[in-house]
Image 1 (cartoon, rainbow, N blue to C red):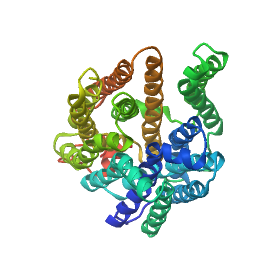
Image 2 (image 1 turned 30 degrees about the horizontal axis):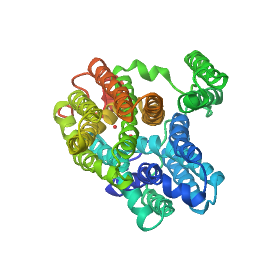
Image 3 (image 1 turned 45 degrees about the vertical axis):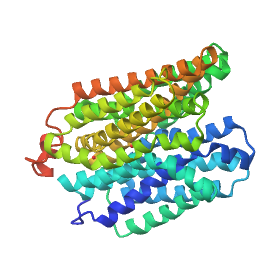
Image 4 (image 1 turned 90 degrees about the horizontal axis):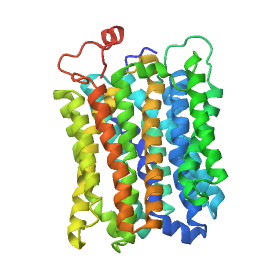
Length: 477
């Protein structure tokens, strides 16, 4: 859809407000578990399920929502996401038990699935070159920065105003986002006949992801050799095989595997999945310092303040390095620094204050690395996606974020729990951290082998039309 409209700062602010309804407010739920539990009188297991459902449903529906955004309209899907966020948050504000809490969390997950790819597609549609990279930096501040602030913000709001206020603020920001985006013209891909959607693929994908999530999160409770665990594992394995076989043959597919023929796009997406999986470190480190070192929830939150400052400070720096050096260098260094930061948290043999200092520095390195990585990675994924599939491509890229985070947390928590049951919490924490170091190393390897050295440079950038025609890389948690 051709338009002379150029993206404005007002649109960027609206997009950031939309993005933080999930990353800042919905994610704050992780830090207010005791308050919610005492208020609603429901089990810890139920609250943990409610927390994980948002990321899981976001990951499951994000590709479908990205495809819908391309066909129906990117602004329209953003609006649908914001409305779902308001409804989901409202249900949580008024809930008196588990039912509305769980329904609200599911709606918030689907809302994030709509907002994330649709807003990235709006950025690609209405910003060019360095302006696009700047817009994507602010998008990243909303997501990576929002997830950094959520632990402090959630704790402060819950302590001084009550945990329900987190979701009242979420409603306010969603309404402000709708107001700021209102004057933006609609953007969608050129129509090529009647709209078709791969409902079969979506059903297979949802069943597979639910089975895999249950296997990881419930396996240790049920017993790894119990019939329920083995059934979930079998459904997940068969589901993955069937999904890939069915999707490759379809002209209209939920996940367009042809996107992965573009090595830079594939490299950005794989490394994004693996670096988001490193989020499991947060669960392991926070649990260990509270259980093993006697920290309060507030004290453990303060340990991560370095992460918050570093990730916010470095996102624009990552953008500048991208423009001067290309995407590969900041992506590699971002992933390496993140992995080093994570490894430092596994040094549980250190005594008292020494370990506290090391964990603080580790969190700061974690944020430093992710901040450098964020914009070059998102830019590489968006720049290398076809203009008629940018919503779907952004959906796959952000699905990698959501599912990477969901499975990273689940695997790390399971490893920590399994080792803690048989050994000390120190050994359990180190084991949980080692899992995340492996994710980080694999992320670095995927960048080295798949991202070209000149990806994302803006000095000799051809016009968008010529890039599209030649297939040359085009400048994106």
